[in-house]
Image 1 (tube, rainbow, N blue to C red):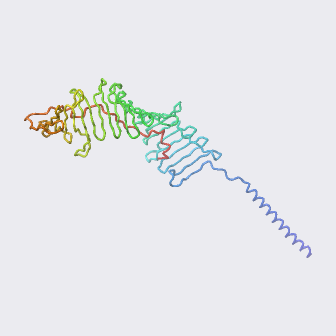
Image 2 (spheres, one colour):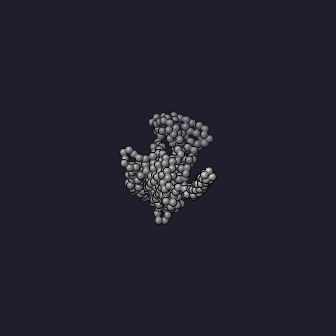
Image 3 (cartoon, rainbow, N blue to C red):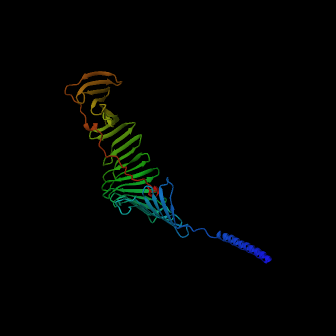
Length: 400
């Protein structure tokens, strides 16, 4: 009985040990199998919260079931602008739409821009940009030859203000601008390091054509009312101004040249040839104006017959000098009148020979028109170049 009990007790302990071994083996096998389980699959929707310096506040990306191919994104920018982007299977942009910040008085957000892209993700197939009031600011489309056309509108959203063309490489080719009534105002084309500008009047007749470089130097032609006859050929830059003026018959009637603040005007009127000298002078109001300093009246051979000297402010003549064979005679005028105060005679070396008082009532005879700047057609003035001549700039604004 005692032997049986001892045997039974040993058997029981052996049985317990066997059970423990089987359990331990099962746990180890289970542990090995658990390492063979796949990781969780990638989610089809992912939320990105960029750091503070980033202009994006949050971005929600949607992917295909493969978890790698992005289909579309919804982006909120810190300035309130939002954007929706659709992608090609390559991950590049296919379509984008931007919205202005939400407004309390509007149930939906106003579209700011909409664009379709080619497979490269940045070349437009078409695009539209809207103002906050909903009017169309500009739009564009790719043409059949691969070039691109952009159209800008006045504030009403439908009257064309300017039309631009870009080549296949997105380089600016030309621009045509219009008045609000639809008539053509200007045509602009780049030429090497310059731009060529043609201006038109209200009847769309060409009135000027000129070249301008990046620092504002110009050279060009101003035309008559028929758009063909030449009225002015000119050149102006920071240091020099030159212009030749012609009448309707094509005859040169005036030549102007300004350098170092001195303008010389040579012209012809009904009484013959004359030459003016204008100098920049600061007036009491502090404004610098071109002020007449002298007028020379010329003969048929362009010889000087007499010279009219003006007051410092250019308002009235102070003396008239006549050229004579033995020297010169000067009529000194009284104040701002044409009354001759005295008559002085000089020899060829400039020595004073004689001086006498003027005869009472004796007046100098002058042509008032020669004491004024000759009236001519104005030179071109055009600065309505609009936005920069780039392919477009909405995509690069990053929500601004």
